[in-house]
Length: 297
Image 1: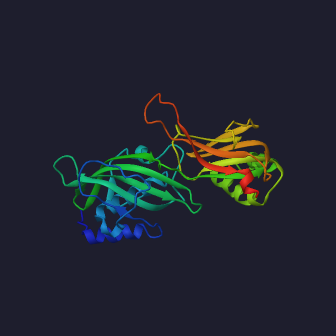
Image 2: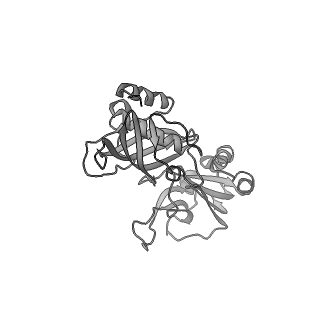
Image 3: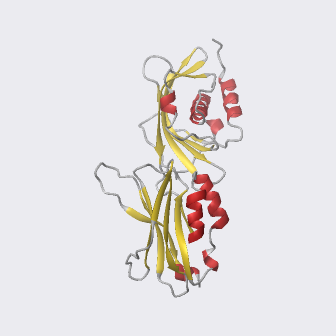
């Protein structure tokens, strides 16, 4: 096999990443420590070892499609597809926002290679984000980079991006029937029909729509809630719809809302992160709030 000089490997990685802004944080070998998503990325891709850029780029190429695209000089061990593909989601349409490398160490065994752990942060043109924690082991084999083991898992930010919208009830019904096939369809509908709450007053037959712009795991939760801003007492509203689009959550709550300047209604998006231990109850916190009386003043 032909030996690839490191300079050529790096140029190959750069060519693959054109149009996909990326940066890498590379620590010296040491104990495994995953960086959280809100930590700064301190170095750029061209300062990282070129083989790391090649391998992570090859992993992303596999994550984006059902097939097994050619990623020379990176070669995957047989039967890796089930580790690189999720059941129902592909990363087509998402670019690499950043790559955070939290551990670099030697490969197991006698052959020269690396073990690398880190997080790939994806984003799309809408601003939605998805992060994947990865662990990979590979060896250098006569010009090839042979990936012998890889593991991927959803990484979740400590403080996910959650947004609140208000729709007229009839528009909410239309959204649920005609624009709920995908999260993108739903977001496009909201962009066109959501109300400007700062210019509204009086009573509104509306639906609150809360949605995550970060992808969250199945055991995390998103709800909407309405309460009295003074007493904190919960106000019972109408139907509450919950939807999950491959980790992007949507909660819709219908009801009649007082949007006058004297209103004491408080609207909350409540988020509970995935429990850290089995059988631990979920703890909800207020991720986003809207005070109707303040908005109409």
